[in-house]
Image 1 (cartoon, helix red, strand yellow):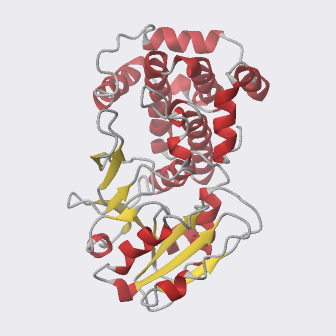
Image 2 (cartoon, rainbow, N blue to C red):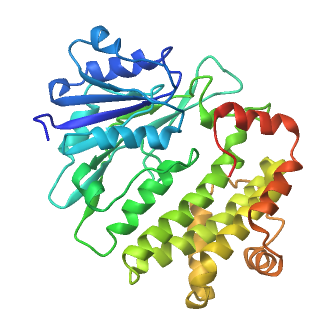
Length: 369
């Protein structure tokens, strides 16, 4: 370990057009001299060593790559190279929101805290005024993104918690593993309700999350690769934590919450992006057969109803004005009664999508699941 307080890990894919904004927001941090920066290139041949001269006041290490592996494994290279006790991650097209952002996160460290979660702002394009994006504060407890979070590196390494090769919701898998690993232990996540620390920008032309924005203003990613990735990520995270501790009841609760969440995603998709409804129903079947089915006999309908009510309130804005075409329990009955065809079924479903959607997915570099 070195004498710095924390490391900022920056995955960079074709980022030369915007990474200087990102590093400038680190350059002005109040604890700049206590920060190490690791930039992990995820595009073969793209060298970021010039940043050391451009930002001489920053302690910068640059990592090259032989092939594009996605944001998760680029972050993992930062984590593997980290020599400080704490690490935070920032995408190359994002910025820290204030000069005190990292100091604020660092001050959130207390005894038994292995993660500090700050509020971040999500920049959203306004269809009526596209030149002035609006911002929405996000500090949902348990949200799946790495934005505005500070992690204890020893905890991650001791518990073998890593980013995977997933290119959509890879941060969800990472954070869900943390959440379930500390269940029932004295270890805690410190949630700060202070000024925002991070700005998640609309994104560059290479942004995975802004894929295929159409006239409705909804990125294709939201109901396409995001949901495919989230399903796989949640299955992997639950399997990982169940194997480490078979008696961890928090895993069963997580699995049940995710099963109910599959219903709300499907209902919203039917209304907002029906082209992906069949694919999202497949996601629900996959989650049921590969994860929820194993614990189903332990979950009473009363528990499902309570979780349904809680999630209905959480999804309030997203589901505003939507009258579900199918009830939750009818949805579950349909999942159980239909045959599950695994990867072959998914390939058939995706073969029915218009070519433009497939091309958009390929353009992002996201692997087909």
